[in-house]
Image 1 (cartoon, rainbow, N blue to C red):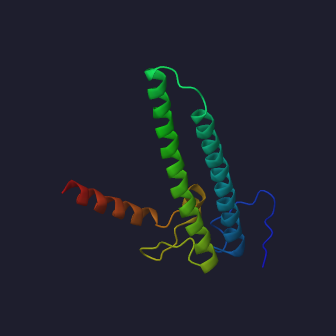
Image 2 (cartoon, rainbow, N blue to C red):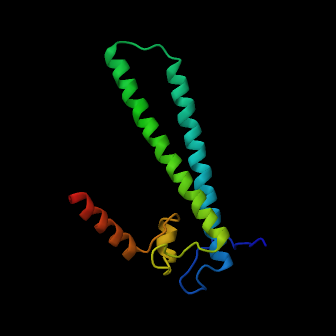
Image 3 (cartoon, rainbow, N blue to C red):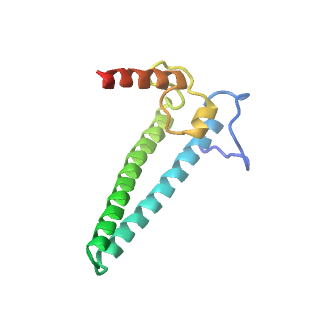
Length: 139
């Protein structure tokens, strides 16, 4: 079943949580984000390829280029991880678990999902997890 969204639709807290319209809104948002990341990733690959074919000057130029390559590769790795999270979020939309906290089962909330559509935890659950990780890291 395809859901048509009215122009300018934004999910509201006054409607049924994770209604078909809200799910379609988030699905479209995730798909657009995925496409944007894939385009940026392809541009990074092309930029690295172009730079690899250019002559390298002195050692300072070489060091600068290696630093830029490292930054671009870290960015590309970050995109790869984000793409995986986007795919997982799209899977949750399909299986009906999208929008609900993986720790508590509570509603994550439309505003949080609009800001971070790959969120899997409520704000409280996220804070608890971060505190637990901090405590374990301090040991």
